[in-house]
Length: 228
Image (tube, rainbow, N blue to C red):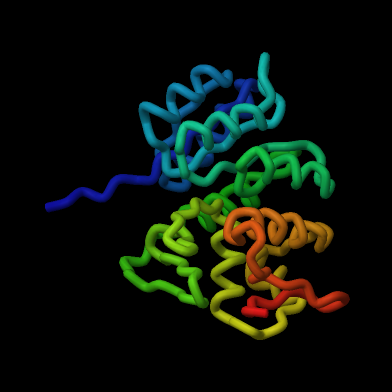
């Protein structure tokens, strides 16, 4: 008989009081929690434990949490990374995305919002071999990877969800409101500029230089996935 293991969440947080609170709430919600209090030990736990999800404070002692995010991605770790941060501006979200993070959690810490986001990212994978196709672009649902002209492309969770939504509605102009509701559906309260940020990064990843644009902007409306 196979024993189901609880997903492991690694929390990298300098503030021990907050770290202990996060750990307690995670365990109460049925997750295994590992704590690290600095970037070096956090990176070591990433390699040793292969956590299902990683929570990183943007302000770590001795090193930026965003620098740690970059190191996590450089090491080839694809687990979702959530950043704890005190400000919510477009620049802050861009910085998180550029560092390889999937999402962010705003301080002051609110357990219900935190656990709601954790559940979104740790939804059980559906055993499927489903693929979405659009021309030479393929999206593998089970691995959350894109393949374009034979090139395998790693995506963050939000990049995957955005591309999936676009590929489920090919040649259909999708408004910013539709995208926010379907991709950022958990009471998103930020500016819609976040869509532009993710579209830009998706284009950099999936569109070959000099080739026709796949994700096209419809000014004043939204975006459409089409051949020309």
